[in-house]
Image (cartoon, rainbow, N blue to C red; front, side, top):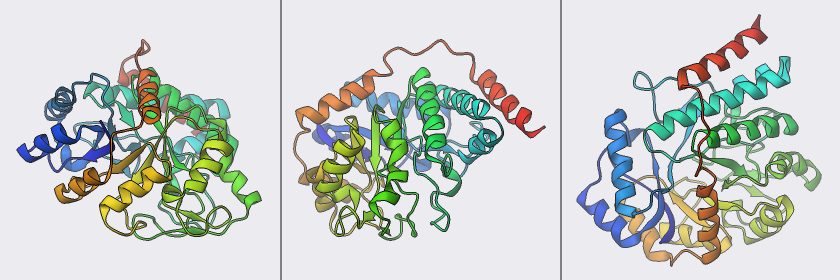
Length: 337
């Protein structure tokens, strides 16, 4: 098995993709809107990926946050609210905000599990900051660290109840970035004391099964390398400072915050201390370059992967998805009255 999560080009696997995936044995896959038509097609695709890998608990990832980040969309699937909606409820009634986030995550998890998706790149633990790029914006659970942590915990637990692993992101915090890391490399010049605000939700949820790094430079920690490529940040801040010992994946290697060829990006993330390098586009040449630059997954990273996937071995007995969404909406309505 290689330490890669890879994307696919379309709605079915091509012969070239099957050959590559058999040869490379990526640790898992990630799906996007381009890979999705409807329930039967999506279930068939995830079933084939599991069959190809020979692993029942194969990580099949998606970014299904709600709001503007949703790969599975109406009319085939219901729309889910942006995370900021739960922050607004929390402002009026904290317990209702937390319980609405939990019910929402359970409903979302049931929708994903129904089509064979096992990992959702949610929740964001980025603390929203005034004046920052709106790439985070309403995707954040708030501007107060303890509030973000409380609703983040409910989200992880709700997804797990439905049989889906949650991924906290973007470690060690994307909330201060002034530019979108999809387009350019953000540089955060906050002090060590200021950055404690960003770290607080991640410290509170350091037990999370999976996390994703930020393609952001933090000059207080490492003035040359973004977190994804910084051995210092991953070792001293993420592993030791935050205390996170779960599976750490990079953000997408294809984002323009990173430079250089894709092999160097993949090997650089792994050398810095990421367990898995994430490549999303499904571009065959780029995937081959990543695969050629990496070796077998380490024993420690494989153990972290297995431990993360084991958290969903037993799903809770939950009400139907529609009932959970109705509970969420009732909590919304009660705080708006």
